[in-house]
Length: 51
Image (cartoon, rainbow, N blue to C red; front, side, top):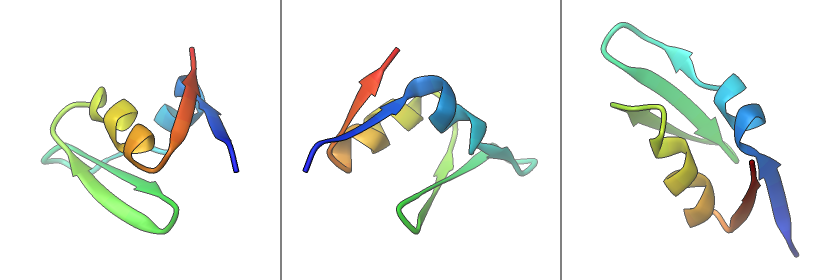
């Protein structure tokens, strides 16, 4: 199965929490120091990102 997502759509699910950001993908939550980490996390889940 091919999974695709736009980078902008993934960024919409990032929530600021005071110490950084929280990002949830496929039921797993990640604490981010930088929003650019979203790309690496999505790719680790097998997503192809569309910019």
